[in-house]
Length: 380
Image (cartoon, rainbow, N blue to C red; front, side):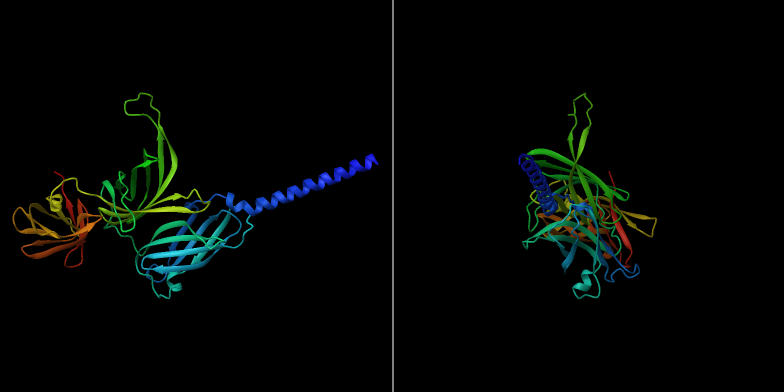
């Protein structure tokens, strides 16, 4: 009787252990989605056109990469409004094994919206993940171009500042240093973290006027007068997306992981300007020697803009030293800062060029024959 009781107890104990293992496996399977890691950079998002000769032909939006679990999502809906494309994904199940799984989705936002063509330009693409409770979380953001690269708005090197937008205030105390060298751009973001100074650095290729730059946070290192020679370490930081509208004006989107969710990201929109240091009338910053360059010409014409005249608060005029050349500009406010939005260069009353991509040191536009021209500041 005693041996029988012990054997039964062993069988019950073994069965209990098996039941516990099955229960644990079930719980882990049900909640493995929550433990899986995911990052905005895990996805590749591209516009793919069937014809390189007709880029306005509605291209497909291809989303590929690695999904954090075996429950691959499908596209539940997409919207196209102006230059914004929103895509919502819905997972195929709730019991998801935490196995990274290849993902490939294709949709055509223009055709879905009932359009025969997709307008050329830069599109802000946002990808959302719809939860079982009906909530929607942002999981990816990209700037994508439909059409050829635009080099007229490539940035000037120097310091850039955040200015208020219609939906967000400026990043008070934060600034950026941006430098373009060939087809690459480097950015340093000087900001704060929990009230303490922090700086981030990154670089990426930028053949046109949009770029996505992973920023690393620099920590440690020595102060300037230290002799220890300890190099700083780099930690994964933010991701910065930039769209340059002019040589001294850009839109930016800072991305970071949302710590309250295992897949969501947070996006901070920025309006960025390279502003003149000087005070007084805005036109003072454009006085100096300038060279007018045509892409198809090896000759340059020099203008020494020395005489500032203002007719009203919305324009200014700079006259050349010889009195024949005049640069007249219309001013627009960007984040509360006056900037020359459109300028015309005239000689003896005849138009030489119109400029609509303007910076502090470079103005880009076209001449009356439609040729691309630039007005470039000469150093003194």
